[in-house]
Image (cartoon, rainbow, N blue to C red; front, side, top):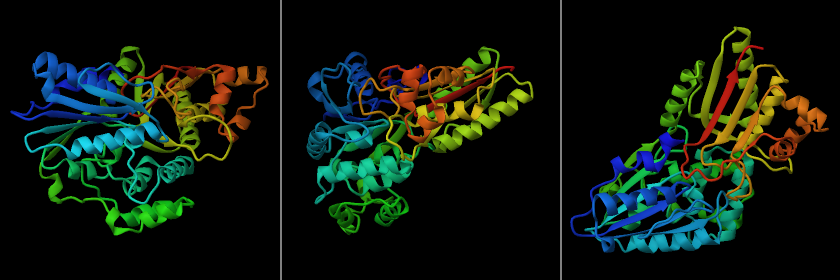
Length: 414
């Protein structure tokens, strides 16, 4: 976590302040508070920028705010946007529209920005946008597919913030939480060109059989809601850089694994798929390593999905851990942890939602002793209910960064 925290990675990337204009900081996502705190401290204490020349607004998830003086912070809903995010985004749009040619607009992005910056397209109500977000989250769509739809129903996503901030110079620094580190996917790419189209958004809705409100269906058919593409002059005065990626976090984890005397088996930091299906495959690999007599830790990252069919509570990491326990069948010598690096995995949007779950060889035996049927909890998508009754929830609270999911399976001899 330290390798991907803004206090560690952001300062070397911060631009020099403008010669005469203002430094306008606009931040969004789960790391928005800590990124703003780090930037403000840098410009105040290192650069000695006059306080009146620095202003801005950060929008972050509830519970993720940090103490800042010049940059106001507002907490808002995630993963489903709320009224606080709607109002804050309106202010962000006003601030961006007021930027002048001698200003620098410093955009600090991290995972969660898509929900924190919520500005529905004209004709689409806030309730419509919430309904579409909920439907997408329950559908099993991956983050790229979700953002394809959201970008075409927004007045800030998909390059539109860059358009609004002209003629100011726009510098975007981002912490990646998406497989492949695509700038257009992080926070739904508010300052970069968008390669997806309205037709792509309609195709996602059709693929997952989403029932769209009439206003949303009309918006996805309206050419006025197409996003700016590569080569559009709105991007002439913009730049984009990644300050932290899942790869950095996993390099630190790999070093810790080897220092502990284990072989490191890295499956990649951009794994996608249904959580329970990925867990079944990882269980097979863990059992195969053990059969070969190898003492190893299997690491993997990425963003798994859950197609919700039950009525329970959970998140992709907790469902992965529960499915992994079932697939391993209580195999001795194998334990695992799966958690989201932002400190919350699914849940109801509260800052004290669990980050994930851990299992060990005794998980299934303890479940039986408590009269719990793991398969029944899995069928009901109730991984939180299972681990809260059995023990095994990983509860960290807000980490104030976000480089996606982290999974580790420790394989020792049986």
